[in-house]
Length: 464
Image (cartoon, rainbow, N blue to C red; front, side):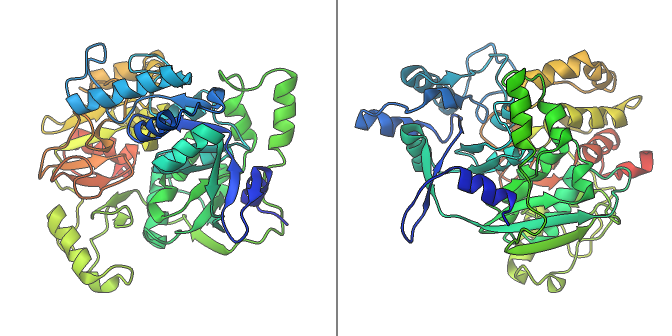
């Protein structure tokens, strides 16, 4: 019997190239300013229109500043990219949520929160973290710029069918352990290439107990272990999250949609190409110590020795530690930190700000720490204010910035200076990812909050 992935793939197959890729129909294409200019230019050079403009949504997120969005962008390259997206959207007649538009935000935050992404859809974007949308039961994956052009022109894309993997989580997560810790543990266990060539479905009781925001965090990080996509079968949690949102069906159409969504699950005897089981009962808050998301450990653990790691060469492991300024066997707990960043398509939703605020409430930010708290969208920004979270943050010495990708990547003004350490709730810790020479330690919102208060890497479970 079929897996959930097979059901969605088969439902969207238009044609099969003999001994070649599948032509898949795409329900939703998201475009941002970085990977779309060449795609639109390709259409322009061939005199081609966007085939189904109502299925395309554009918004800038990577290059926009998180301060003074009512003023022109100072960086010339960023300004040009943002302006080009606006011009292309207008010329080709597709929806555009520009900088300053209250519908704007990080694409992978806005799509789910507005119900532009729905269960059963195929969703693509010229961005690897499109896997986020799989949390709603959608088949979602990143594509290249030439493929963006293909979807714009035909509403289809040619794709080789990946293999299937199911990761089943067991056990009960301890207090203070969140979805980000679950994801970082998974990547550490499987390795950054452990799911290469697979579409991954997440299952098990810990997954069913995750909120939608938590599921998005997990699916977002699927790509960091090489997966083509990550997906979670929709359930009552999914339906409750979507009901009443702007682009969700309503009335009789809602009932029809839910009836269909309830069929989106892997059959009891479905066969996956690979099965993995991970027990999370002993999990503690996680932190990375190296330059890929798989180089992680429990926050109170010590950095392992190169000889104990079969998945990495000693040379690359030691090179990573040299870049980070760490040594084998070193414990990072208590280490001074310069920056703390809360945000991104991984942890920029309201639940992440609730968690952060729960720990800093009644405390105060360390003077030695620069903290950037960046909502993933204007909708998240407004919810933070409405729930009184902003007041808690301000009383603790924190400032809320305007939405955008911010310090997740060095494409805007929010860059970590060379040599400085940043505890970041983002998805990547590659060399230079947050700025030339920046040293990134990936963590969840609770670790980020505790560290921002103490000024050094801190285990949040001590405060719970």
